[in-house]
Image 1 (cartoon, rainbow, N blue to C red):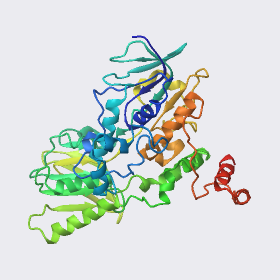
Image 2: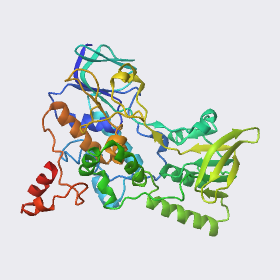
Image 3: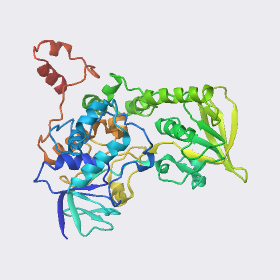
Image 4: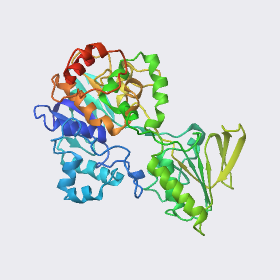
Length: 445
């Protein structure tokens, strides 16, 4: 088959799925998305019972820019016959397993998705990009959009020990990980660490001899999801952030860590109540130790088990714990996909290896004008902390579509934040009675 595409997508996760759903209403755009896996499956290793989304279900694949789109979460509920039951259940947050099913439901309906088709290499020749890999035959495209996702982060001190008895949380649910009669350590103090701690304490992997939860953070820090903190997850803020000088961005991103990488307050309450019941109302408690402010710097192994050597940031002491099993809830890190290796020297990357994305998510490169590379989930350094979150998936996809087609297919200019992030426009705004006109003046400024 000879393909001449306007856009080829590499990777089918939520971000490219959002792009595909929104492009489904643009019939004149020839697009296809390629994925190595045989079917869509979102974070299967962390679908623990009862876990909830940290993002509103209204921030789905399409609703923020196209609420009438047939691939919205509400359309999914209606299509599944669940709408009234869902409303009556009055969920403040959607169960993670249901949102994953929604994403799968969308993926199964979109004809532009091609699974079992991994892209191993991308080359550029006269006329466009050429994609090579299993299941691909002479695929050519004028433009690319790459969204291959993050990779599980494995700290250097533990790399050599990863295996059946030491695994990353990414593969926790699908593993045969058993802790019966074992001492087990969880490394990482975010949401995943909290969920795995509760799962192990409940005995879902057998009854452990002891569960030790280790975190670098000074405490079990809560996710900050209050109203004005959530302004960081809006188009208005992202645009202001992108316009900042490069040297201003890293400290701001670092200061926003708990806006997307803390433990949800609801989970902390469940945890506190669980431990109260376990300590005072239960006779069959699994011994546990919660150890915040510990930085693991060395790990060893012998016949007795794993030995974790760490520094206590609270009192400066050196400490060691010995365990039989380890779960790494150490998060994910960005990694430039290997298929772009032939183009690597032609891309404009920053010192961390992130592309220096333009406002519309293009990667600057030395190729001829009119051939663009877009990247999703690669803009933490350029666009801020919201980049890896689902909150702005639909808006970002719409920005890319408008850029790709060079027309305003979608409205990507919602009413701005009540917070003025940069500049002072009070005088200009006060001269305009209509607030929307004031907002236009502000955006142009």
